[in-house]
Amino acid sequence: MDQVILFDGICNLCNRAVNYVIRHDPGKKFHFATLQSKSGQRILANYGIDSRQTNTFWLLQQGKLYSRSTR
Image 1 (cartoon, rainbow, N blue to C red):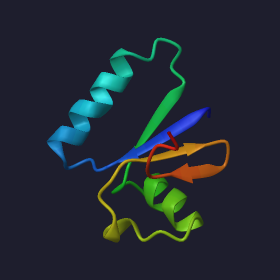
Image 2 (image 1 turned 30 degrees about the horizontal axis):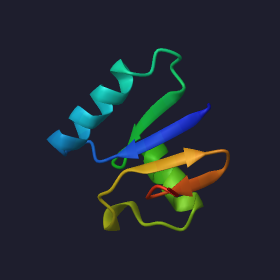
Image 3 (image 1 turned 30 degrees about the vertical axis):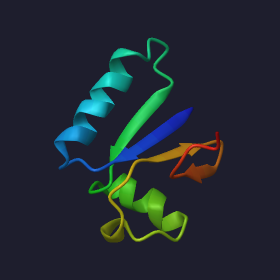
């Protein structure tokens, strides 16, 4: 997997943002997991983050987990 975006699957705004990324990712570099899913919870747990205590987007890229832009 190139990059995984973790997002709140209950949030309508989050779902719309994910749909936007999907439409604008012709190379299919991004994969997705909801914070509520087993895989999403497992990824966050590997980084010491409680999935019940977060409601933001996360990007897993090259083994690093980001919650905000570095720019």
